[in-house]
Length: 170
Image 1 (tube, rainbow, N blue to C red):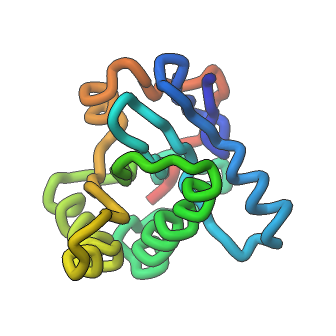
Image 2: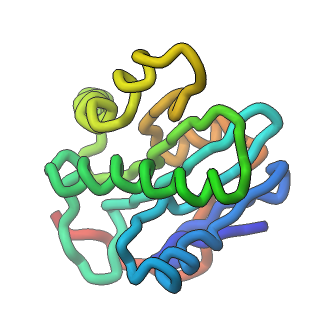
């Protein structure tokens, strides 16, 4: 199972995953009239479910600029987590969920990543689930670059496709 991101420039090889899908995207479009947003890929490992959202702000076919810290992006990334839970529930997947935002953007740095992680984390159910003794909606949230993803998940690498791309102008 190799999935290609929406612009066709990068792909993720999930052949070594226990289970993986990107089918929820089309189902959401077909069955909810685009009311729900979804993460790009859902991947099951031996002990976790990974919700993977991928955004590469350095490559756009339209040449538009990308600011990962704007409020619209922060809200959209958190919404995708919540909306993807519906699919997971219907698939009867009950493992802990780690939400990973694979992000590339111009002038990428650790400080900006940390600020963004903190902004998005506040919109995820970490505080809510502390009120309950049983169950967790989310286990972890992280923001990683493609290189960081590939180091932590070498069995599921993200790599370039052969499609030529235009560099985003900032």
